[in-house]
Length: 452
Image 1 (tube, rainbow, N blue to C red):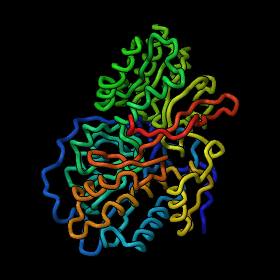
Image 2 (cartoon, helix red, strand yellow; image 1 turned 120 degrees about the vertical axis):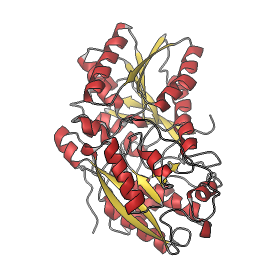
Image 3 (cartoon, rainbow, N blue to C red; image 1 turned 90 degrees about the vertical axis):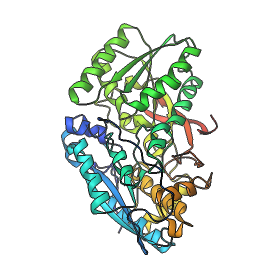
Image 4 (cartoon, rainbow, N blue to C red; image 1 turned 45 degrees about the horizontal axis):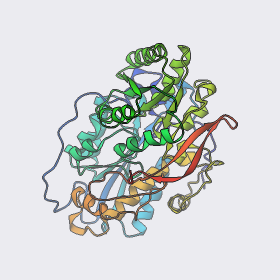
């Protein structure tokens, strides 16, 4: 029997950790990294099998980030994402009926993760459960954003199929290789390189002598700011003013955002864009409104446009006037009336897999967790197809690197894989806020990240 997704609130959402965070410090820690990044893993010769691989089975763990408790506290509006366990079982059945993973049966395990309890210690506990108790070959992460999470899995040689919108740059991917890959989303470096020219193409910087950048204070953001943002703006005689936001806890977050609004207002900055996602745009727009600061905003899929639209009591609609940016995640960029659902063959293929198990989705937003799950499993299966006795992360990554454009994520527009790439998504569209419909709309056709 199919499940009616409707538009009711639910606790399951890989992208909603930050909404929960506004209520408690613990929830804030769900999207903020803290602590040092541990050393990377390398040097294996690529022969033999990885953990969780037996002669006839491969263990894959799916993490579902549960926001029921924090959603009840905040009252935020979010669409249902259906039943993640049923979605996992649907994918398990499909894979096992179609050759398995490297000729082995996929053994799927679901782990519930309570967002309001998030902390580095909770992330380490989850990692221990998955790598030691479950002995997983791969884990599909959804919402784990502590800095110690991914290095923990890499040290245990467990492949992370990352279904979280998190800012991980190429340097981090290389340090943790071959144990970290994003099957549904683009590489962060590619995103930043495309983001600023796309803003400029929509007139965002026209007439501007200054630009404000509000960014989570994290290594990847600092690297992108120095390597890409500063040179780009200076070439156009635009002076950057960056506000590095310490999101360690609710106090530092609020202090940082309020001070950023005060400073940008004092400098008469009229253009502001965001780095790092984690719903920073949502919080800043609220703080800026309270400080009497207004600007034209540049945003992206990292800022979850659907959340900005869906919570007008928290995010003033007038603050979105003139907002432009780029989107690579239709399920949280625009409504189905703006981009028909389903629109691509990968979307239809994943919907068919779920429908066979009785799971259906009324809108694309309802499928925002299911699609990344599907992308992760299908890419895992595709990359492992010919590995046989050498099913391990090293060989899998090398095999995926030979797929080129053969794999397209259901989550996005197009795909591209190759040596040295750690993310599958390769397409975006410009979008902007339309005051007439009080919604975001796509503008133009797909553009490739990798051509830039």
